[in-house]
Image (cartoon, rainbow, N blue to C red):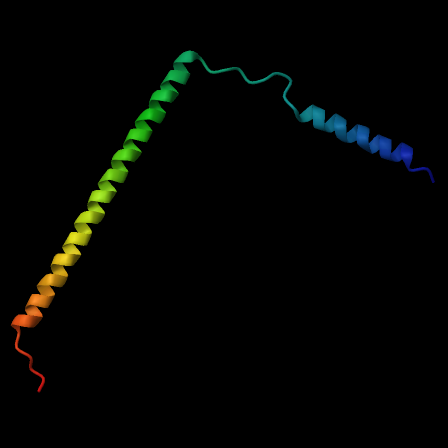
Length: 86
């Protein structure tokens, strides 16, 4: 049995189906106004992300300070309260 003609038919069929799936024309470029709007949206999103990071950093700093203060208050309370164990 000769496999070359079968193999050639499979290769031709595969390449034809692959070519059929590619678009005939490239997609149209967006209008310049849309590009500008996208650029502005990306810039605004970047600024919002930066502000969110700054706020998160401040929140963490405050949380650490609050924890430190709570530990200090607990230690002071422990010092002030007389020990009941003898």
